[in-house]
Image (cartoon, rainbow, N blue to C red):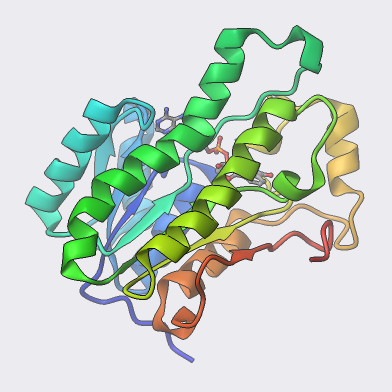
Length: 247
Ligand SMILES: NC(=O)c1ccc[n+]([C@@H]2O[C@H](COP(=O)([O-])OP(=O)(O)OC[C@H]3O[C@@H](n4cnc5c(N)ncnc54)[C@H](O)[C@@H]3O)[C@@H](O)[C@H]2O)c1
């Protein structure tokens, strides 16, 4: 079974680090030309493009800003041609007791984790729909299903991503396939002690697999969903999660 994405153009949001970077590299290794979105991470970009290879280019944009997203999509289309594969991967985490979350914090998490999926999908579907093919892959989280104390804004946003994925899958089928990934704990900056407490890191890893995934293990699911082997998948959330959640 060989996945061949030659001739396809892919955009990966939040692609400078972690899961997004691994997805960008895996899509590129499968033959796609990859546009790597980042958010002012210029210091990382030379290294990222080196890892991703295959003529990848970087596009700096805040995916919560509608005008910036539209500019980015226009630039990618001018440089690479129409986008065939969109991976909505950018995200942030907030661990905080519900009663301490400020309105600004709530709005930021919803903007980065959910509104960005609306903005990027809408910007790209406007040209993808008339062309009559393409696919979108939304990175949610197993926590969309499990819920988690002190991660309410994140869980709410990711549950929103699941609902948006299923609704768009129905609206744009059969020509465009829209699916998602709900990863379990994955070794990236998001799972580091800078981002979550030691208590939650221990709980995150208390799963049947007894370890976190490597980002490349999540990327494999994205490449599959982008490929023709997933042509009967519509509105599905695939969950590489080490057994944390058995759907
Ligand atoms: N690491 C995990 O355990 C885990 C588990 C489930 C889901 N996820 C999801 O996977 C995705 C990738 O996360 P990761 O674990 O690789 O962490 P990460 O922090 O390495 O990656 C997130 C990326 O999103 C980018 N980003 C944040 N705000 C942005 C903005 N406004 N515009 C553009 N880019 C922006 C960041 O710069 C970063 O590169 C996220 O959606 C996350 O919620 C991660």
